[in-house]
Image 1 (cartoon, rainbow, N blue to C red):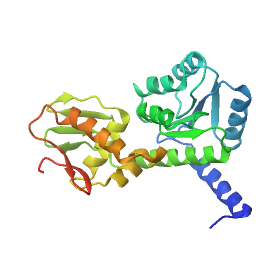
Image 2: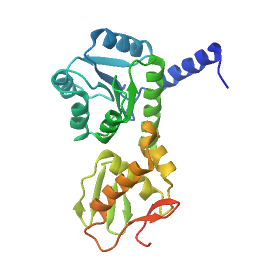
Image 3: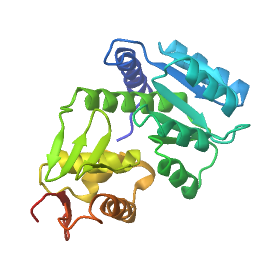
Length: 257
């Protein structure tokens, strides 16, 4: 059913009000957005829109300037264009994720090819928005990620233990047999939801919704690839395998198959 203009305006107004509520982090500080966009006209348009919605938004026009600003101030949200001078947005995304696994990142790009989108998500971006886009859609995606982050931050973050596997959700750290295991953001998110399921089997559809939010139509092959990544890091050097497949149903994490 198509929505008329009045209903659409009401929904966007409601979304804006919810976004105003979600601008605060757990410790009560306002969320600051840092925008990397070398098109000064577009950058100004996005910034003005976000300011009108009640957000704080700083601008950077190249990768070096962006990184410099991240060292001067703590930001709670990043918007990254890919094709920018000095250091491109994908490399910036990769650099951010080396030390920050949780701050939301949306890629804003004119590249609409599936391979470009995959590259962004492999660098642990949270979302990908193709130019030209409607600013209200950007607002909805920001709201969606803030809502997920707030839910995640308010969830149970106690240490999870499965056999000799120890997961620290609030630190994004994983140990197996007292040895630290380095995981990418998506690998950690995948392992975490499997651990939190407490032995229940999770379908590929559920995993796609929780870890990738069905972005760029995540394929079953994508999930299988990440499960294999996890198995190599978590199970390969240990006789007791923890990651299991239930054919036709999905995956589960357990010390007992």
